[in-house]
Image (cartoon, rainbow, N blue to C red; front, side, top):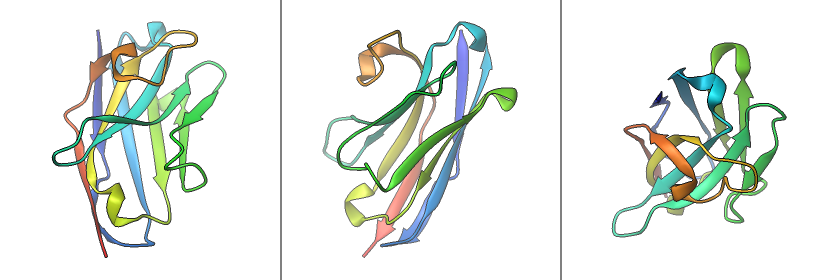
Length: 124
């Protein structure tokens, strides 16, 4: 079992930046990838970005390409997501997840372990 804990959310003005962190612990050596998802009020959870532990391959939702960057620090078992040029529509609870398998790291059902989430609020 892998445990993940998110941090770094908060309130920011539009066009501002935030960096989210996700610390993983437990059986991380068996984890293929880490992902970020978000859920806005009244909406379904959606994929944001993911990264594979070994090769650092990254994947992004079209809505965040060019603005968000996912990265990792294997030594710290930590994944980051730098969010720039934030928009009010980015407001959501952001969740980190561990799991995935080759070719399957962009949907929620691909991941096994989830954090509690961190709130990101972007004011206009």
